[in-house]
Amino acid sequence: MRKGKFMKKYNNKIKLANMLLDALCELKKAKLKHLQDKLEKFSDKCSEAVKDSHIFYAAVGKGWFWAAEKIKTKVNRNLCDFSYHLQQFKNLADDETKLPKPADIFADLTQIEDEFGELNFDFEAKIVSVTTDTIVLDDITFGSFEIRLFVDQISKLYNESPYRVIALEPYPAATDSSVTHPHVSSEKLCEGDGVVSIRKAIEQGRICDFFTMVVNILQTYNPDSPYVSLDDWCGVCCYDCGYTVASDECCYCEDCDHDYCSQCSMYCQICEMTICMGCSFGCPDCEQQVCQRCTAICTECEETVCNDCITEEGICNNCIEQRKDQDNEEQKEESTEVPKAVPTVQPDSMGKTIVHA
Image (cartoon, rainbow, N blue to C red):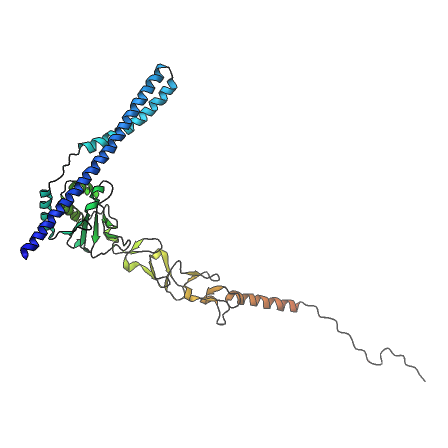
């Protein structure tokens, strides 16, 4: 039984080694195709230079100096492109990376088991992976990571990364949930200075070295190029301005249920509850900032004011002042009004002539 399990594991490693070799052959093919493209561009520049040379020779011979100057400017401009494509071609042509033998890849896979304890592979998904130990940087525990190498993506090495770094017990940055490590964002590793070495290891089929280099980057903190610095990792991001503050320095708005920095928050001047600027209300009467709970609507003008600027009857101070002004105006008008003349009532005998007998 134990022998059968050993043989199955042995055969799987042989199968995996052949699968990796096929992927490296595709990578070699892609690299040669890339070299072919560079060679074609270089050849096009050479043909263009020959064509410009004939035109320039003819222009000079016929005394067309203006045309000759124009051709010279074009040639000078193309020489820069010519040098660039020549250097690109030389860089690719000088690379003498050779394909490894199946036995070398098999030995490398065995070394991975010795280094990491276990080598995981999924033939259907064409994934080779290892799991790291728990990563701890400056007393912050990030948990373990799974490094997945997608075998069918190796041929795209020159255009995109064929592997992912996945947090198994994610403790993301407080400011960005996609950053699970100072140098890992959206499962992609910032390789820094190790980009060339990692690419070379994959090209040469040194899969164990590839995994080892990735783990070394995960175990090292570079303060010059993190996605999120360790100093800001446990902080709280202000919902308004995005500034990161310590968790004990943030302000929580009970109205919108978000955290804010001290610059983007305030307290209600009536109940002293903490609120953000967006949830605050500026009273039009007294101009003090209050929360929405400490406001009321005037029953007369229907304007919203703070509770300090409204009476128990539900009337705002402004309406009360208008009432007083109106009453004073009415009283003033009554006091200055001229009284109407009252007709005089005469006695019955007034206006009659007395006749003596």
